[in-house]
Image 1 (cartoon, rainbow over the protein chains, first blue to last red):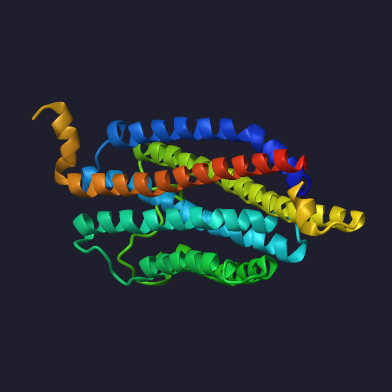
Image 2: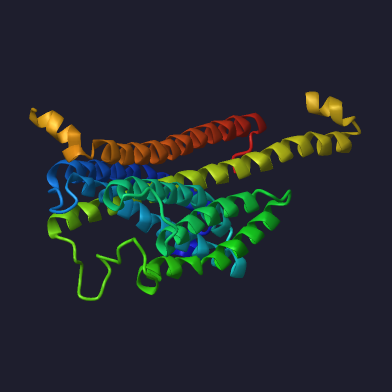
Length: 258
Length: 57
């Protein structure tokens, strides 16, 4: 399926049909998740109402890592098989991943202040997520730093793949080092430690964030392909009258004014 | 306190909880609106150019 969709024209057709449905579903799931997180979920017996920050902090953290895995995979495909859409996908995803990482860091800070008594500590978990945020920014900056777009894409792909080492560090930082951040409570041996009344809204919000990523990814990929076509057409519009003019023995300027 | 102001107070954590939700709405809503506007304008530019040049694909 990915191979067939790697054809830009087919991608435009399929994504154009999917986009309104995906966008609508995103709005519905996020609305449901927000009502659940802010109204229906119970307060925590220790953290009180401040636990509601979890319903955006944890999904944002999942997406911060998930989007980076997506970019690394797309970069790998771009480097090895040169699929025409792989670079487009990776570059469209990067700003969305940076946004999720920023939300993860700021909501974590706002949760840490009342619960830990500090906005920030340089423990392994927080620092490795901050590194992830800079990886996103570095990727975007590097891709746009070249006049030749294909060289920028190549350099970006290599950076994205090297940066993957940060992801297991984030995941296992809470086990390897003595961090202020708590260890995993969902994906752990022995099953989730979190009560169902909070786990379900958490998963609904995570699904909503995932759908939001899908919607924005398609939107931004379609934008990039539109812009690419526009550039090609502009070039064509400049070249075409000149070629016709040369064939008819006319100066290019006169031919272009017709 | 009535039910609404109790809820808005968030057990005394109002500043933290609402700031967190506000930042998330601002950042994620912002990138959504920006992506949509860029998509609309790129579609319009392309359609105009396709009409001018008579080239479809």
